[in-house]
Image (cartoon, rainbow over all chains, first blue to last red):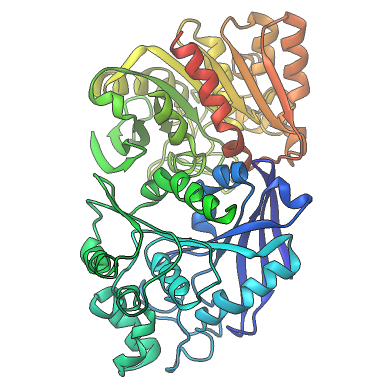
Length: 276
Length: 276
């Protein structure tokens, strides 16, 4: 593993690292914030999955999460959103290919060889960060924004016991019924829609529910709200009577200004579960 | 004035605006955060001047200042660092021309027609924001990073009565003696070094002192510390017995991770002066 940069940040270290990935068959870059406490003992970790067009860097520099993670003694990991590089397939559209991995394992060409972001964030990267850094693998929580909110919700519901809590900012809630989803799931997984269901937070919620604390924030004036479909997820949560806090925040949109405005709440929410 | 964007942020609004500037003879873009309180009454304002290569946007998205400004009910203004556009002179180097205005009024060609950032941040933009927004012109403070720290210090010392307090992150402290300064002051102001002195915080401190609260943070391992020369400024401050807090922060570098780590301190410091 190669250290790209390490910057002192809120008493800890904001690092960026690159490593060859077996899951994606290419080099992957991720950001990792370690609070000062990690010098002494293993610390809990909050995963932050990013949205369309993002790299590992966007949330790392714009979400403002380190301030609160440092206060709580929690590590933050910022994975990239897709494989990248010259040999990796791409598409001209912003919402397919590089920068748009959707946290699935692609089965269709030209995506299948590299677009295995599910395996990367569910298996490979967790093993790598808990092995190489002072991170407590028994205390993990997960959040994300937009496509990353989709990833956070689907990972949390599909990997029971892995996370202590899950939250999301403006998540894509029902991709099998949205243009943010149908296009990508079709491209990556093929036309058989039965293979899509395990990547739809609303369908998973209807079928399996969730037994860890759940917090979701969406802007009441999010410009993409019709693509996010929070109403479908809210219906499913309420139908299953799953304990959850689902909030529509008045006047906020889809930007990082929204995320940064509520990141303190989310980090505190996760800290409560991680230190229970 | 044209509204480029307005995003809800920490209960207030983070706006970006563009306007034709008489000072620089071109369109200028700036960021302005207005806390919720500005809906009801004029609020105090903290100026944030940015460093080399930055636009209005860098600090606005990376410094994390809005969280604390919202808490204190303070506006934030993020000016650009130079004139820009097709008719505006530029240089291939990152540290001259567009993105590197150095907060001076150029007298030398090809810079003289547009590079009048002193007039822009000292006169034109203050009139514009206090006229068009709910900002209290009697309660202004100023901060900045690197080249912007230089700007904040020189403006504060040259405009007595304008600001209630001044701070800086990793400021260029002694540009007449540094490669971050001699090159630019020579290009913009010409070879007569006597014209440079009013743009050197250390020389101004030696000559005039300062009668408002002063806070400066610099990373003890800042990779550019030899160009910043905090030792010259500290010597001048101490020789004049100017009340000040000058800090070297252990292990921090020149990045926005440093700025964001201490921005809470700076906003609180200014709030104390602005609400005195």
